[in-house]
Amino acid sequence: VLSCLLKTTTSPATSAYSGAWMPASSVLYELRHLGVRALIRYDAEATGRASADFGNVSDAQPPPAAVLYPSCPEDIASLLRASCTHTSPFPVSARGCGHSTRGQASAPRGVVVDMLSLGCHASGSATRLSVSVDGRYVDAGGEQLWVDVLRAALAHGLTPRTWTDYLHLTVGGTLSNAGISGQAFRHGPQISNVQELDVITGLGEIVTCSKEKHADLFDAVLGGLGQFGVITRARIPLIQAPARARWVRLFYTGAAPLTGDQERLIGVDLGTAVSGLMDYVEGSVVLADQGQVGSWRSSFFSEADAARIAALAEEAGGVLYCLEGALYYGGAALAGESDVDKRLEVLLRELRYARGFAFVQDVSYAGFLDRVRDGELKLRAAGLWDVPHPWLNLFLPRSRVLDFAAGVFHGILRRDGGTGPMGPVLVYPMNRDRWDGNTSAVFPEEEEVFYTVGILRSAVSEGDLGRLEEQNEEILRFCEEAGIPCVQYLPYYAGQAGWEKKHFGPAKWARFVERKRKYDPKAILSRGQRIFTSPL
Ligand code: FAD
Image 1 (cartoon, protein in one colour):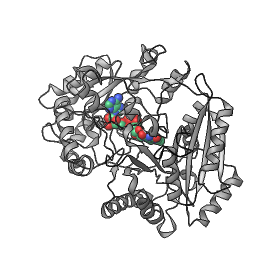
Image 2 (cartoon, protein in one colour):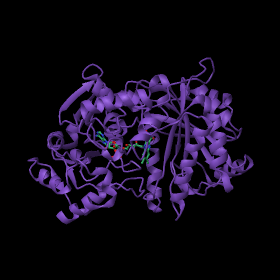
Image 3 (cartoon, protein in one colour):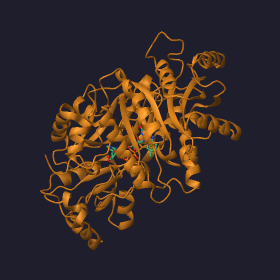
Image 4 (spheres, protein in one colour):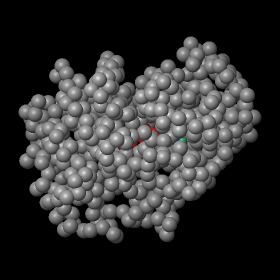
C-alpha cells in the first residue's frame, strides 16, 4: 500500500500539486489517527474507482491517496479538521456519483469522500431523506439521488418543482453546479429552489445556512463547484404533484422558428396565445447521422416516423430542430384531462413546426421525469455508456443564439458531411430573473433570456475523442472570434487563469476568492476542479 502511495508522490504529472502539500505517506498517517468510525481504503481498486468519472477522459491529475466512506457527517468534519490544522494540508473532495467529465470530483494525492456511503449506513437512508407534509419540504442528504427524492415526495402526493434531465445524480453534486432542465424557465435552476443547507466548511465546521442565516455561505455553496463546503443536507421545497404528462415533440426545419416558439412558450412575449401553456420546454438539434448514441435520451418514435423524420432532415440540409415540451395534469391540485386537451389543441394550432411532424405521448409524471434512465440502460446493454464523453455545455445570450446555430450546428458540426454518431445536442432558453446573482453560479446577465447549449458527445470509435475535443476547442474559438459572450456550464479549465479571465471575470472572481479565503483558506476542497492549487 505504501509503495503505491509513494509512487503517486513521484509521478512527473504531480509537479503542480507538490510544494506545501502533505506527502501521501503522511496522509496515510493522519487517516490512521483520525479516530472515526468510517471505513478508509488505500488500495488501488478503491482509489482508481474514486478518480474515474463519467467523462472517462484520461486526466493528468494524480489519483487520490485514499477513499473515506463516512458513516455520518461528523466523519467528514473530522477529516477536514485533520487536513486544515496540519502544517501541510491534504486535498479532500466530496464525490457523489462521479458524473463529472474531467476529474472534478477527484482529490489529487488526497482523500476522496465517497458520499453515497452516508446513505448506506445502518442508521441510514430513512433519516437522510424525510418529507415534511405540513412544512411542504423534503430534507435530503447531500448524497441522495434525485430519483429517490422524487419517490419519497411522490409518496405524499408532493414533488420538487425543478429538475435535471437525468435523475441519477446526487443532490450535492447538482447543487454544486446549478441543476437545469425544461422547468428552469419557470422555476429557475435547482439552486434557486433550496431553503436551507447543512454544510461542512473547509475548516471542518458544521454550519446550517439559508438566506436568513449565514447567507454568504449559503450563496457561496450553491453553484460553488464544491469549493466552500461539503453539502450534507438540503431542504428542498415541495408542491402538489401532477399525476401525468402529455409529452410533446415537434420538428422544425430552422433554428429561427424553433427559438421563436421556445421564447413565446417561456413567456418572453406575454401577449401570445401560447405563453405559459407548457410546464417543461426544451429543444434539441437533430443531425441526420446521429445513430444510437445520438438518440439515447429516450425512444419516442415508431420506425416509420423515424424514417419520415430522417427524410425531413435530409431535405433540410442535414439539420433539423426538435421542440420538446410537456404539459402536466391530474393530481390533487391540477386541472384534469379536458383542460390539458384544450391547452394542447392551442399549442398544436399556434406553434410554427413543420406540419405533420407533431408527436405526442401520454405518460406518468414520474415516468416523464425519469425518461433518460431508459436510454442509459439501452446504451449500457450495447456497451456504449462507459465510453469517453467530451461534453461541452455553454450558456449564451438570446440575441446571439441564431449566430451560434449558423456557425456551429450548420457549420462546425456539419463540416465534411457531419461527425458520425456523437450524442444529443440540446438547446433551450431560460429566464434570467429566475437565477440568483448572489450564488456562485456564472450565467449571462446582460439579457432577460439566455440559452443553454449542451453538446453531449460520446467517443465511440478510435480517434473520436481527439477529434471531438478539437471540435470543442474550435467551437469556443468560433464564439470568441464572433464575439458571442458564452460561458461554460459544468465548466472545465486546465488552470486558474482560465477560471479567472474566461469564466468568472474580475468582479465575480474577486468575490469567489474572498469566499474561498473565508470558508476554505487552505484550498483543501474539490481540488479536482483545478481552480485553486495552493493555500490562499
Ligand atoms: P460528482 O461528479 O460526484 O461531483 C461534481 C462536483 O461536485 C465535484 O467537484 C464534487 O467535489 C462536488 N460535490 C459532489 N458532491 C458534493 C457535496 N455533497 N457537497 C459539495 N460538493 C460536492 N446537469 C444538469 O444541470 N442538468 C442535466 O440535465 C444534467 N444531465 C446529466 C446527465 C448525465 C447522463 C450526466 C452524466 C450528467 C448530467 N448533468 C446534468 C451534470 C450533473 O449535474 C453534474 O455532473 C453533477 O455534478 C453530477 O452530480 P454527481 O453527484 O455525480 O457529482
